[in-house]
Figure 1 (cartoon, rainbow, N blue to C red):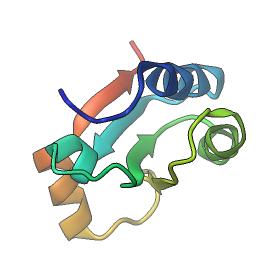
Figure 2 (cartoon, helix red, strand yellow):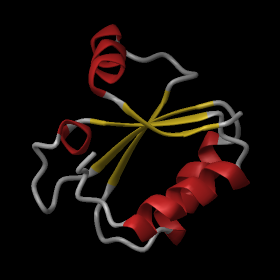
Figure 3 (cartoon, rainbow, N blue to C red):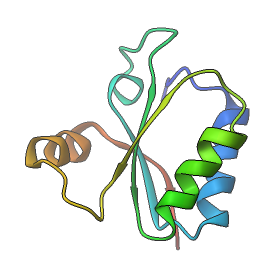
Length: 96
């Protein structure tokens, strides 16, 4: 899966997910599809756990200048967006 996201950044996302008891993190959007640009943001759909703390950790601790768009899948999400995430999303982390 070519996402254009450095391994260190992916590892930091996973560490933030574990730290905040997140159940699932799905990459979606242009980086999941592979049609991203160098400056494309990182779209994450997140469920379970302390999502607000996860988002704060991502914004403060992940070593990238790219911006993040984090969707709380436990809240109300537009049906079209849910369908898009299911169709094109790539699971980055899933709690076992």
